[in-house]
Image (tube, rainbow, N blue to C red; front, side, top):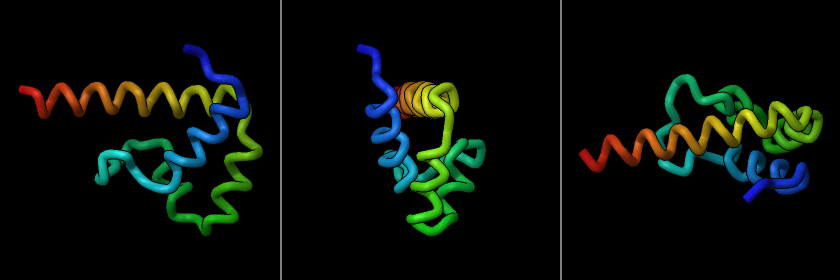
Length: 73
């Protein structure tokens, strides 16, 4: 299933609120955004190009899969 830009914006905004696995890794692309105020964070995301939004979502999908595999072992 592919996401449209509006879907990407919603997903990145939700991910920016906090790590879905409670402990974000240091290399998470949203670490710095999470330190901003909510308004600054959302405004920054609104200005991101589609490619950057898609890259953030790809990172989080890979991170989730990797961390799920670690716990399964």
